Image (cartoon, rainbow, N blue to C red; front, side, top):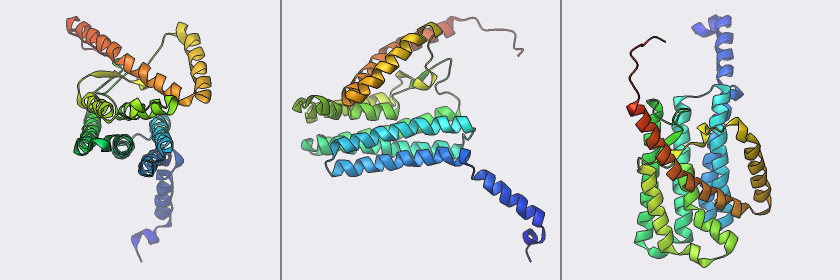
Length: 271
């Protein structure tokens, strides 16, 4: 007879510990991450089948799950190295492979080998961006409340920019957005931004003054109503606004760095 079976109390304690490890608070974040991964893989399936709108919707759904899993992990206190690595692998599929393949099948394939190279470069830069983010997170060098900027373009934002031509075509039915040269240039610029040192705003740590909450609430309500009646236009406007915040982030980040450099070094190290 094993030692575990000879001690019923220890057996019950171990079983209870295993049940606690499988609690909803610890399983839910990883479950949401896997749902995002499934959305990204499904987007590839829709793209290969020529279902462009469904492919874009699947990528957008992956973005929603990507936001929810982090919030769920912080809410339940379930942040872990395993969750971080799983999230990165899911992001590589949902925001690296899925948008690149969608844009390739939709437009870039008309450039032949050049279009395929654009796809490969984007996927490689997505992997580099995610690996660098993991290292920065481990070193506590990522975006914070005091420095709400990422280094380089996050992969969800890069995925949104990659599907921007499709969004334009859905709303305006203009063949110009499907121009493969235009899409290749967009892919090249997006790839460069991901691996660059350009500061980009972090929505997670974005803070507003209290006196502006009424305006923000009104703007949010207006965007929600616009999204109901004109979803593609709303997404295009959202991406354009986000891109417009990058120069502002660069300026503020440089100003913050200059203030930090010029600030006197404190001599009192007491806490």
